[in-house]
Length: 184
Image 1 (tube, helix red, strand yellow):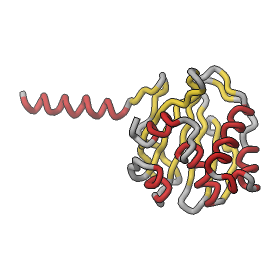
Image 2 (cartoon, helix red, strand yellow):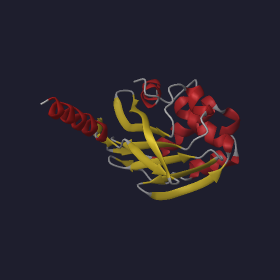
Image 3 (tube, rainbow, N blue to C red):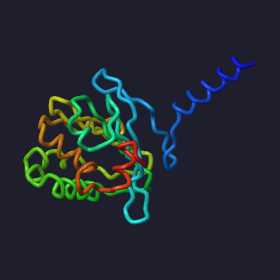
């Protein structure tokens, strides 16, 4: 009987690890980026006023709980934005990224690489859309929208600047920052 109870406990724990629901979005416990397995570090909801805009998830090779750990971590990282609002205009996302860069990395915000990154976002986003931003230790950043590549750039300063949009002193959303760092 004890063996059955233990087996059922493991089954319940493992099924819980497979399915994490945040604001109606099924958040994967792991993703693969550049042949590396990244695990979910944390997720949260990006809100603008009282409106839920997207579920933000951070995937890392190693668990991090502070911005300093995240920025110092030499591993691959992925930020996933899973949109839940019915429609978010591309201008609003570009404006939010521009503001996040200006607030946390002013020099990067004015760079040619930042302008190239912002130019990748040419379509509106609707509920169910996913934007992935992968950040590699060599300073390469790539983004995709629903699996379609948007662009790639190599700039260690931009990689750090983009991370600071969510994890800097003036993040886009403090609650989202805490959630993605697993402290939510």
